[in-house]
Image 1 (cartoon, rainbow, N blue to C red):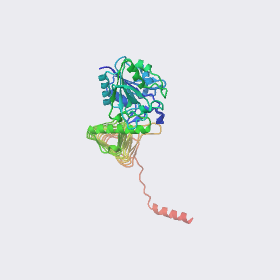
Image 2 (cartoon, rainbow, N blue to C red):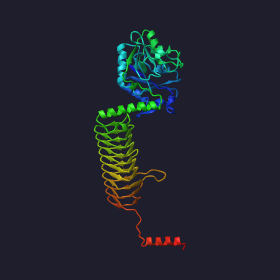
Image 3 (cartoon, rainbow, N blue to C red):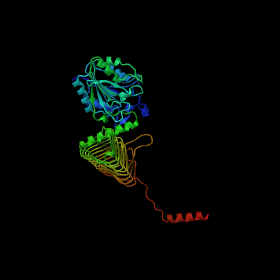
Length: 465
């Protein structure tokens, strides 16, 4: 097969986004917008992908590995943008041109477009569509033989005549060109249009004049060719992308109880028979095993969950929860938390940068930070690791089968040995040996008649005596 090079045009300023962030770097379901057409080109089998960005190189840090960056020094139109990638284009093969702000394009569409281009032996093939509101889109002018004669732009007043504006077939902005002769044709384009720019569609009559043919590939569903110019259109596109993500997961065996109240990023993976309850948000590179129960009202960000994990009403970020563990309700797992097999982080528990051993339980109302907790340990309510001394963090080591009583504070660095206990209300500042009971609290003193003395004192103050 001929080599296929994909060129993604992404140098536009995106002023209508009203943002300091370049338009194509705005997040769309867990990916920068520009990463969506890149992903489609990869899936469609592109041998090489070049993104044309602005002169500032702002896109460089956001491109997938292996994707090349070309820079358009001045925003002089789409044809000039393709020319900016000249050093990356092959002398032979096909060049697929996409837009970085048309993120819903699919590999299936690109496969069909490239196949039609090669079947027709065309110099250029472009995707076309029809819309109820064609405002701003170039109109396709057909030749008598049915091929494409030209595309008339309508971006500005004066670009098109009234009879051309009445045409209903539109240029979708997705093209395939035969690489041979493309660059010469691009260099022959002029700027005789209302905006004084080098329009990529103006290359089509030049290719025809050179003996090449221009084919069209009509696309029935214009949804996947929707462009993004502002945040309203970004939200509309995100709705479609989210629907695709959820439908794909459901077809793979995931139950999503209420798709309208669920957000899942494109990078999230979920095993079969997992149930996602309403108002759950699964973001970033989160991975969830099989047979889990997530939510309701749960947020997972870059979290890794094994099989058969339950997480209701909780917030987890950059942590790992292994098979059979339970989290919540109302738990907060912060970065670096690891819950091993069958362990538990219960109600109003916060865990950060800690290793909770297999079968260990932190049932409720506790903060465990910078700690290692052994297997089978049970930390009583309001167990706190005091891990910060005002200048540095320190670790707490809690052995296996330890039982801390309620309201235990462990002042790090401290070690509690295997099978040890603590007394309720203890502030443990020294190591507790294996099998020992650690108690650290003031002796209780009862003052008899205290309430009567308080009442007498209050009465005396009231009388001024």
